[in-house]
Length: 175
Image (cartoon, rainbow, N blue to C red):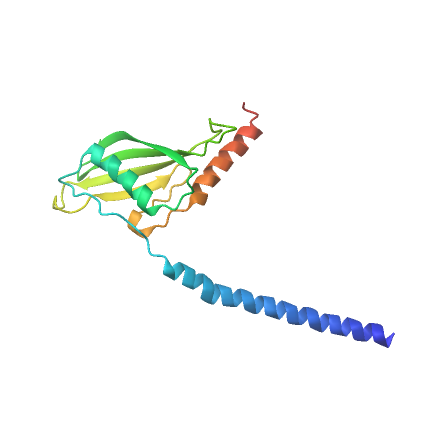
């Protein structure tokens, strides 16, 4: 009986030690490693064109350039970009673009779902024309507006949109 109590006490102490070690490792990771990983990354951007030299075609070229140079995506992702419309406001003009994403495969060359990112390039009517255009983008399932110079694009965002669409399709029993 004493041996059973002794073993139970040793096991209890061992569990306590293991819990403390795990907690310490988690705290170390959160306080050191994770912060270092975040600190190492600086948002990448391109040199956007000035307001005076902007054209719809140039905007499309620069969106393609921005995506290819700053977004870290697997090579299996394919996309097509298109100009949607121009919006004339009192103090600016906004040019709206869409980039449509998918991952076709040999087994399914026509994807079950796609994900869209929408870009808006804004040209101020008030600021000097020598300043660069203002650019922001958002994903089809989100209201959050991202600025290229402040954001690190995550491939997971596109994957989540596509996965949610496929789940919805299956629940609605669509072909």
